[in-house]
Length: 142
Image (tube, rainbow, N blue to C red):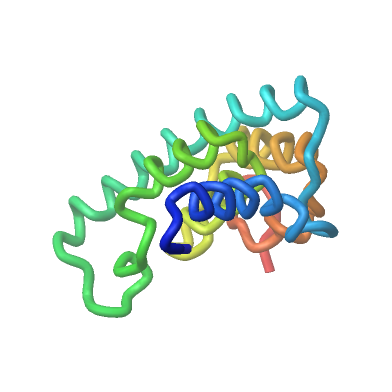
């Protein structure tokens, strides 16, 4: 978003940032502040665990094959992306990126991690279908 007038660019960018949650009406909405803070903490903790699993996979594989599940944008540095969304109050986007980090490489979560994931999603008002593709221990998968 570049205009000749710097202040116009800043205002337009800030307006877009503020309007972004409106774009996701139906999937995401702004939860009450206390729910949002609790979800943020859960997402941050889960992201750390998921990034640890991804780092182990990258270590095991080395350089991922082109177009493989590990050769995707936003996986190797996924924790940074989630953290950036959380720092900007975008818990819904952070949750969505966390899901991407889990589903794309087909990670399997422990039952406890899956419970935390569902808790965060529920606190954010996200429909359970959003995390239905997450594989997890202890429950049957399709």
